[in-house]
Length: 452
Image (cartoon, rainbow, N blue to C red; front, side):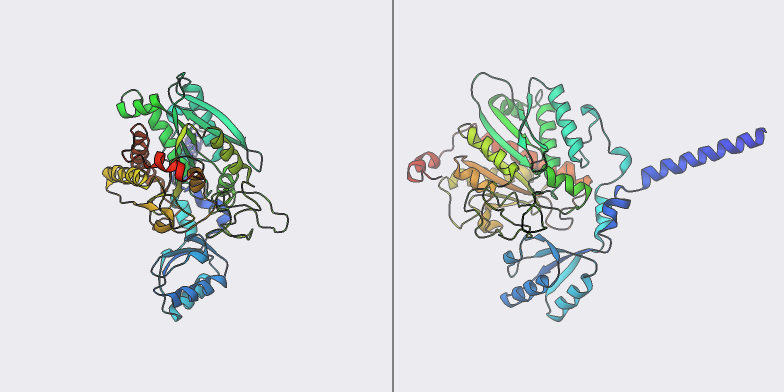
């Protein structure tokens, strides 16, 4: 009897160890997305001349691909890298076509499913309930982020105010956190949004990081305390809530919103091509199935319309607009829709230079900076150009890490350094608002450029 009991105990202990080990050692992505990306690959292709560009466009046009960089076939240029996600049944054909035409390429990611599983780490440490235990070094679902926002609002009533500016296409609330010391006087403000494009998960991770750092360092960091005392920060951790939710539940590489189209089965609009500034011109598509689809009309997406309405209402106070994207390691400013110099170029250029210098000081990571049209590519209908054209003098778009090795699958181990360095850049831009730009160009040119 005693022997049988001892054996039963040993069996239960062994079973418990197996269960614990399986929970700890099995990656989150073991069955993520129904294994739909198994065997898919990411190619990095570099056409060396205009002829190769045309051949590459034709090759990619013959198969269904997911362009990572640039985000449209029309933007492919010679001597510029093209990162493209190719389904497993098309990889052999594309490889053969590139080799036949002698176009330079390499396979960056040989099995996309495995990279997805590696990105999100281990399941056991993911769920965090209280704000004090919240793990800022893992990616969080929309539900977790919204619960965190409520908790932040509850635990920091003197510095935080949470509100909704509307609802998404699928009816989800569009939450914003206002950070700053309560004062009677009207303060200048900074708007920061993250998660405009659903698959760029490092964006929402940074917005959460910014809130955490601002609140936790308020007591001991004199720079942060001055910023919070003299400015308000409007933080929107997830702009494209429907798309972000879909990127967790169904398609890891979904980019657009989730609105339906009457004529096509394709869903969604590029929320960074839907703004009323040179809408649906160069760098945007009028086809609903394209990733850069501009929508049926400007501000057709309720998410875009809600943010635009809020910024119009507060345009006299909002002095900086910052949108967080990935990936490329760039800091961009207007114009995006044309090759031209903005009126207050000296002030904005100086702010960008100081920001990337501060970012570099953390880990030596280099960011390119400049006008979006020349630094990245021409695109119309962007939020950054819209903000600038609507009187916000400092409008920026960050493209965070990396430059393509991980692409949209930046590992959770890199959340901390990426957010730490970006925090320095954003603090530098914000601190610049408390000083007067020496050139005064923006004020002088407001009369000459009333449309800005």
